[in-house]
Structures are given as structure tokens and as C-alpha cells.
Amino acid sequence: MTGPRIDRVIGAVNLGSFRVSAMLAGITETGELIVLGSAHRAAQGLKRGFVTDMTAATYAVRDAIERAEKIAQTSVDTVLIGTAGAGLASQVAHVEIDVSGRRIEQDDIDHLLLAGRDVIQPDGRLVLHAQPTHYTLDGAHGVANPRGLHAERLGVDIHIMLADGAPVRNLTEAVQNAHLKVEAVVGSPVAAGHACLNAEERDLGVALVEFGGDVTNVAVYAGGMLLGLASIPLGSGDITDAIASAFGIRRFQAERLKCVNGSALASPSDHREMIPVHGPGEEPSGPPARHADDAGRIPRAELVSVITGQLGRIMEEINRALKGLGFTGQRGQQVVFTGGGAELVGLADFAQSALGKPVRIGRPPQLRGLPETHAKPGFATLVGLVLHAASEPVDIRKIGPPGQAADGNGWSGLVGRIYHAILEYF
Image 1 (tube, rainbow, N blue to C red):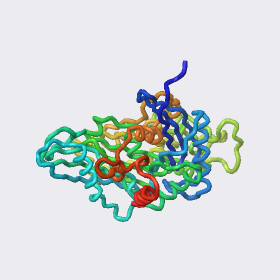
Image 2 (image 1 turned 90 degrees about the horizontal axis):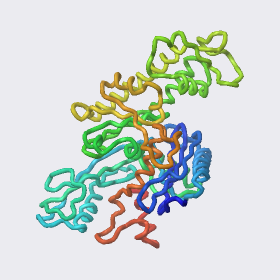
Image 3 (image 1 turned 90 degrees about the vertical axis):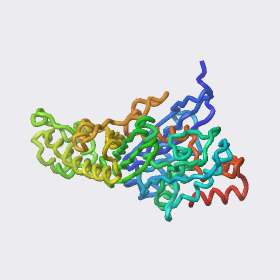
């Protein structure tokens, strides 16, 4: 039997500091999202969300996308890319127009969204997206679609994601050099929110903590939209560095110890358990690890102590960010951790104790075709990118005059190229 017919293929690339991952997903004629192929490889030329070596970053992107294409047995020439760095910032703007109590038509909504462009104040920064979230009728919130309703005033809340222009252009160029067109650059808090948060959590109030390799993003959702964002230049890679420094070992050895034997929670048996510094088949070289016995083993208790010490400092920064974003009181109850760092054993319990709030680990949904190795917190942003694209989000900068949509199919020739050039550097 043949599978369902694929009407549209989505390509996504997430450029993290630890890994570069790629995914191809298809939308069937019935609207189902199916993962066709996904792959990842070690990151090169990237540090804390910034391109540090264009050639190396381009190679990593090309390698990741080719691996995913091979699995999917198809190819893409246009992708969405995700970024956790580049100085991300979030704004929410509100705009209203007078509709004089009459029935709201599509033209009214288009005029409202056109008026919304004037409230975007990037202050010299790049606008990644400006999306309408909720409409209001005479000040009443929570209207998903106002068309056909009556009101004196029609309003809309617009979520605006900003970034520093130069880092984003470097990321874009790295992908373009890999012979791919960039459909959009999506802030990872938006993508991860699609993958890890449900509608009720976003409405009641939730903090999403993306615990990445070099950057930790703290995003606060309430009323169904992203209200605030803070970036912390620390991540799980700093825990790896702390282990390497404490025991005088190589980074790759420290990373393996953290992932295989590490934990955010201590246990009474840790002092009795000795763990080898060297992996299977690895020949010892250089001086022995500090605190190691004659067999090259270290007490697990000391490893856990180093991990929890560094993790405690990161939690202090997260707590400070949450307070700065006003995530307190009744709306400051639920915290969701995702990202590669969230895969550390015992993290949820440690974070719950450190932050004084309920914590759960956010994982991507079980999409059809998603391999088990990628159904983990470390791939939440990648999965979120295709979910974001599949939702066909509206960007008010691409709304044309009433009756004319300014999307990629509605513009052609010189005027279209000029228009999109202006959008790119908005």
C-alpha cells in the first residue's frame, strides 16, 4: 500500500552551539504532519548562537540537511532556521481601530493589521516576525477570529520578536552558502513553545526555560502569547567545562561523564561508586585525572558535586531572570525546562527545589515518523520549527492592502524584490 500523498514539504535547520540538526516534514492531503527525515551532527563554527567560522558553519548545515534528505528520500531548497542567540528580545504591542458598531469584515481586519505596522519600533534591530495573537472587541480579550462579530472598536495584540541584525545575517548567510533559501528565521523560544507547551499553559501563565549548550533562554507566556524574554549566556556546556576543569580531563571526556554518569541529585551510594574517566577502548594518555584512583576512576559523588555546584549558579541566574520578567504570584507557578541541558538526570527535581516552583521537562510531541532519538528535549526547537511552519503563521509585514496579500506568490518582478528587500532589513 502506498502512503498518504504529501501536499507540502517543510525543511528546518536548527543551529545550536552543540549540534546542528535538520528535519524534513510533510503535510498530507488530510492535514497530518509526518516527519520524513531528521538528522544531526556536531556543531562547527558556532558559539553561543553566533557564527564564529563561516566555512565550518556552512559545512555543518550542508552535512545535516543532506543526512536528513537521504533519510527522507527527497530534498528541499527552502528552510526555516532557528536561533537561540543573536540577542533575541520580545515585545507585545496593541493597536485599535474604530468600526462604529457594525459587523466586522475581512477588510476591517486587514486595515487593523496594516495599522499594526506603525506600532513596530525595532530601534535599529531586526524584526524576525510580527504576529497577531489575540483580537479584542471593545477591550474584551481572547477573541480568536472577530470576523462576523459587532464592536465599536477592534483591536489586536501583536507579538514582535527582535534580534541583532549582524548575527542573524551571518546565520542566514551560512545557510544560504549551503545552497538553501531561508524562508524565515525563528526565535527558538517561539519554536520550542510550539513543541513543549499546550494552549492552557500558555493561557494560564508558564515559563519556558531552554537550557541549551551555551545559552539559556527564559521566556514567559501568559494570556496565550509570549510576553517577555531573557537570555543568559550560560548553558549545559558550562557544566561540562566545570567537570573538565575540576578533574583535569578533556572536554569530550567531561561531556561523556556528564551524560552517562552525571546527575543533578546526590544519593548515599555515590561515595561508594567509582566511575572510569576513560571510555571503552580509549587509551589513557597524559596525566591521570585529579582525584582518580590507580584504575583511573573517580568517585561519582565528586562528579555530582561539581555538576550541582555549577547548576546552582545557573539556577540563580534563571531565578533572577524570572523575577525580572515578573513571573511571580498566581501566574508564576509552572516552569517547563527543555533543550539539551534538560536531559540531565534529576534536573526537574533540582530545579523545582532551587526555583521554588513546579517544574516539568518539556519534550516534543510524538509526531508520526519522528525517531525516538529525536523525541527528546534537545530537539524540541527543531520539531517546533516544523510545527510553526505548519501552522502557517500570519506576519503583519506581509499583509498587503485589503484584498491583496503580499506573500511570495502575490508579488513578482522588481516591485516584489524591492518589497522583500525592505522586509529583510526592516
